Structure formats: C-alpha cells, structure tokens
Image 1: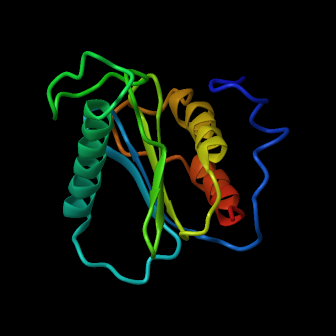
Image 2: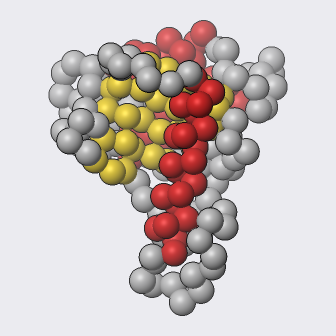
Image 3: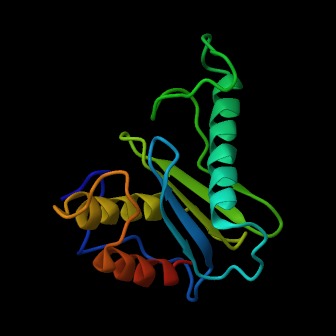
Length: 169
C-alpha cells in the first residue's frame, strides 16, 4: 500500500545515492511535539540531555515553518509569525545545510514530522523521507498493539529503518 505516491514499500525503496552510512540521527515527532522516535547512527558529540534535545529540534522546526510561511511571496495572507500552519498549507521548507550537517524534513498530512540529519553532501532526501513515512505507517500505525502518541517500540520497524538508513548516501 502506498501513502505518498511512488511504489509499494517492499519492492522498490528509493536507491541510496552512495555507499556507507551518512546519517547522523533521526527524529519522528507527532503533531503535538511528542518525540515518538529518536535514533543515532553517527553522532560523536552529545551536548544535551535527550528531552532538551527533542524540545530544541521541535522548536527549530516550528520556527522555520513559521518563518517560511511568513516570507512566502506567493501568499497575500501571511498570518502571524509563530502561528502554526496546517500540514501542506502555505510555503514550507524541505532541508537546510550547514558546513557540518544537512537537516532534511518532511511533514505528513496527519502532522507526523520526520527529520533526518545527514552528512552535508547528502543529496535530496525527500523520496527517502516518504519511504520512511510509509515504513512508519506499515509497521507502526497498522500495528494493533501500538497506542498512538506513545514512543515507537516496534522491532520490525527499527530493524527495517536501520537497514534502509545505513544505506543512504
């Protein structure tokens, strides 16, 4: 089954662009800012406790979404800076890059936010984020034992996610 265009989950995930693991970390938040999943692969420096880290990341996303909506040149109705935008409403951002990392972002229509932090030379990861979202739907949302809004504890999801992310370029 597909949720964001493309093909079925199992037959053909987006191809990795290079060999090796260039992913540093990944977050999945629900619409209320609750961190459902946090994974690290290559993060040598840990500067914050996890709750503070999650709050800062969600705050960054909230601020960037508000800023991009406010600066949208195609919309006459700008709204107030800081007012939450509905998923798919107005202008949005997909990624930004610094000299040490690239942050890629996707928000689903249901408000699930997926953030993947990678090496700064990583290519466009929008299709990969859609694939990860489809994995989330198949292995977490459809699991009758999962309670929405609680941390993700699915071994099958974690294993499949790990295999896929380790192959990203």
